View 1 (cartoon, rainbow, N blue to C red):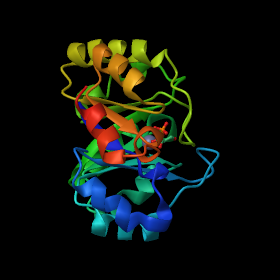
View 2: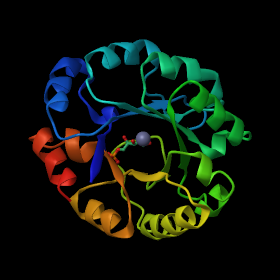
View 3: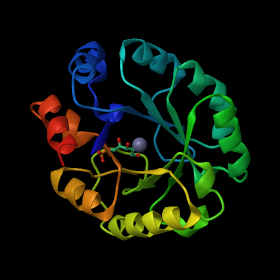
Length: 214
Ligand code: DX5
Ligand code: ZN
């Protein structure tokens, strides 16, 4: 299983130490949650901070923008050297155009769905995206409880991707631990985001490894 540990749960007073174990761990990507206090009821960190994180992180950046008008920041995300830019379906009335802008900038394009948004809205865009990120909590905070209905959404999404000929990966974000991770794998997920389960563990590298081995 591919793992994308979420920076939101890291110790920001000692990012250098966090990146030390992270760079040597079995993590595949670093998941970066940008929040604006408008699209979600919380503010996390912005590009001036992330510039320094990008400098010391040696793995591909999986950027999750929980902001309105994410298309305004394609250039900033690109400047970080990001591998993947995730925008919310709910924040993009012109999603097809945004996906095109992300690709033109040379990044992989991901579309994220909130828990209340059905996967069926992806019918006409699935073939154009590289990844679908399903939120298994309401976005805005780390450490929330996994919403079990997500398992059915993963299954429905897998069928939609097959039907539309899409190669998109399925990533799931929120409340992931060993138990929910195992269920998500069975349902058909490709990538798991985990914040608290990894960064809150006594040995984060080991927690990451346990998820990766699922
Ligand atoms: C929530 C964020 C998540 C968060 C996950 O809005 O998108 O990436 O960091 O944290 P955990 O794994 O603790 O639920
Ligand atoms: Zn996230």
